[in-house]
Structure formats: C-alpha cells, structure tokens
Length: 355
Image (tube, rainbow, N blue to C red; front, side, top):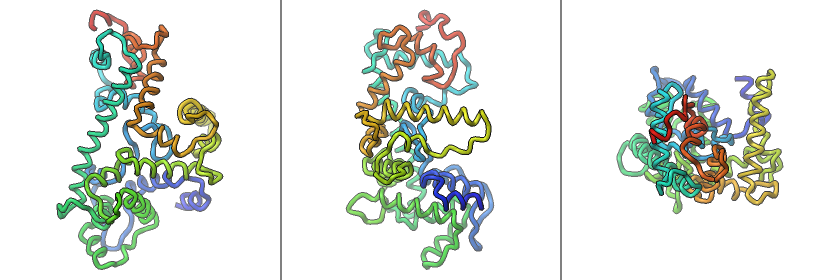
C-alpha cells in the first residue's frame, strides 16, 4: 500500500490506469466498512454492472494501451471463442473456410478490400448487439424498482454490494445521508464512476440514466459523446505538456513497468515499436507528427467506415503473398494465427478439394 501511495503522489501512473488497478485491488480484497461487509465470493453477474476494462472491436483500451486482439475481434466477431488454442486444428480449418466463403460476397474465390470492409462492419455490429443484450440484463440488475431509470444512489448501492458490502445497510446509510466509511481506494473508484455517470447523462441532464444512457456508461463506444469523453481521458493521461494533443514521444511513454531483466527490456522495446508504428502509420492521419483529439476519436470510432476500409487493406496486406491486393483461401489459412489466434497444421492440405 505504501508503494501505491507513492505512485499516486508522484503522478507516475495515468488516471485511467489507476482506475483499472484500483478495481482489481478491490476485487482481490473487499474494502472495510463498519458492520456492512459480507463474506462469500463475488457473483460474476455483479461485475457486469461495472464498465468493462476491455471493449471488443475498439482499437485502444481504456488505459491507453493498444488492443492486441483487435484483428481477431473484427474478423471473427462473436465466433472468437470457437478458435481456442487447444481446439482441434481440422475443425478450426473447416470453420475458417466457412468464414472465407461468407466474406467472399461475390463468390469469386478471393476477398477484396471492399468485401473485407463490409465483413468488419458486420462483425463490429455483432459486438454492438452483444453489448446491448448484456446491458439489458445489467440495467435490470441496478433498476430495483423497475421504473426505467436509475439514480446514482441506486447504482452506488449495487456497486458496493458487488464488492462485498451489505446491500440493505448501505442503502439505509445512503438514505439517511450517513457516512459510509469507505476506504481510500473504494472512494477513489466511486468518484471516477460518478464522473463517468454524469457524462453519460444526456441533455437535458436529470441525474438519472435510462437503459440507453446506461449502455453508454458501460460501453462508451456506443455514444459519440461518451467516445469523446473516453478520448479526452486518454489524452489527459498521456499529454505531458498540457496542450491537449499527443506527440510521438508522449504516445510511447505510457508506463509499462520497471525493466528488471533483458527479457523485460525486449518486451518493452517491442511495445514501443508497435506504438510508434501505429502512431505514424494509422492514428496521425495528416502525418504532421501530432495527434489531435479529433484524430484519436476517428481512430477509436468502431463504426468509422473509412477506418474499416484501412483496416481491411492492412489485414489483406499481411497475408497477400502474391501481391494482388486480394486474399485467397490458401493465404488466409497459412496466416490463420493472425486472423484467429490459432495455428492450423497442414493448412494447405486438400484446401481446394475442401473448398
């Protein structure tokens, strides 16, 4: 805890990363509260009322790190779980062939950038629909009276209950405006959630969230206003000179941990190279060496069709061995690990016969 406070006081960690770490600290050790803490494991469903750390189909994480699974998320959609490391290779190959035939919209046995763009948009929409369905269940969990609106106090009670506190006692203390006696970490998370809560409250602000606003609270990628807020938070964490823009040096200087050995140094070097390439080749649209909030917002917008086309071209280029700017079946099978995260043995065996 002493190390934690030193990090906070010296501003060595960005705010959103602090938020991420605090959530995990609280998950690992429920906060102390007089006569209000319950024993027992936290229910998985309870965690669904918290904004997720990772957003499927969005290029950047909430803490400013790049989404390492982005290519697979926008290529596989909700079928990602079917391609696990221990899955049977022949079954995975068959499934990948099926996906190829669906992406190949005009049935000419090759995938163009336009076809891949169309597919990426469809898969992104799948993630959106999945989040909407999950949100419906999460909203009902925090709307106990079923009036279609949730107050901050109602949400606060459910949040603390999900962290091990006695729900009835918390609700009573809030109703009577009594001190909840929360520890520093829990209070810090509540303040961050409260700020995000009121950002999700669409004008005219009524300090209540309906189901759609609650979706924006949990998934900022579903709302242009919340996406702007998310971008603003990331820029604030990375911006070292306060000009509300990002230079390359600022973008690659996000803390990733102390380098303790050569292996860790190699990991950090790879991390810097990846961020440098993404900054120069993708995010900095006008190539002026500066990333504005508008550029970062366009980069992070999962429903941006221009971004989807650029992503499609990049994905094809990775596997385009014959340099025809299209993707053939044998190419996608050979580079299956890039598209699915799973290697296929004997990828070319009987490809055309199976197809």
